[in-house]
Image (cartoon, rainbow, N blue to C red; front, side, top):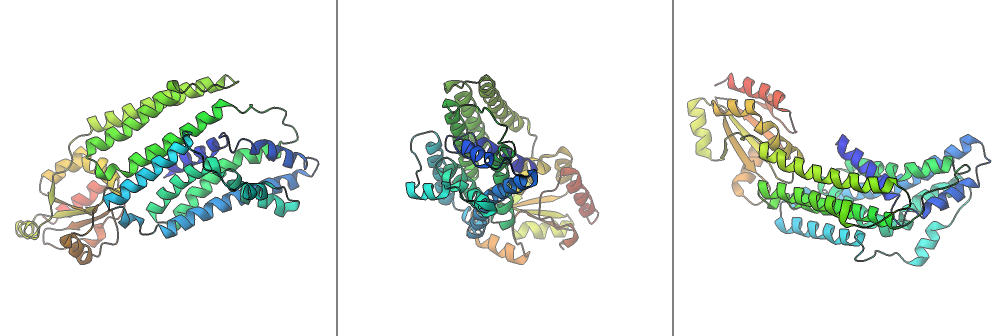
Length: 395
């Protein structure tokens, strides 16, 4: 999550270089430049209110999306819902690629961009910044809203959009602080269209992320790698956008190379992944036989749309030490809840009081659950191995 938030923060900073937000920079400079004669403390106060206003608007959006999408996790068990979400993200990305424009009524934009006096005026400017910038921010924010809604956590929704707002508002805050001393900023031009296309590829990547549950493991990896490879080639070399400053050429090459490296790493890590633990489908007879033989059982309730579940599958359950212990006497059972409606699964959810995924149940050699070992989140291989060793003592 820390790396995710850092990426969102950097994405917020990058949004400052889109064609709709960049014109706000001289507005910000002129607005705060007129206050440059005020005490430094007053100027800092205005700058902070500007950022807080921006953060509040976007954070409320995140909380609303999380609350209204509280059942999205269950909805994501439907292949149709996943395909619709992916399609919407691709449609939003085509706006950032320049195929169509999201426009607001001119009157609403004029009202939002008016200057107002006093601290409230500064706060109001921050509140309405998102409206002015909506033609560029809209597709990207809508894509992020879809992702936040799928998680269903209001606190996480607030955190994600607050972080995005900090990234968007921090450069404007520093411009406000030094508005009286700024003489020159990079001129607008084709390079801002390149930034929009970068955000478009982010949405395409999110679309590939959402359809992963519908694909086999190999196809899911190839889809993500393919998006990264296509984005790198397009942004680094096919796109011919230019700028009047030399750093842009290095940025284009750097982004292109980084995306290609990411594609190679994704594919390589999948190829080099070792064998997984020997999973078996659930059956009442399997549990009865295990109890009769005194063999412990581990039942993993998971779903492909669940991020911690995938971490367990990709890291913990592929760890060589975990695989060895599982092969020497632990019965490993997988309950896949990606798609709902299975009556056996519904009975097991009720029987074991499973509230969400991931949930890993540890059943000892006497057929009784070890509630002290129950797992409801990702656990690294070494910690999981300790629980397996405790469970095997009952064999």
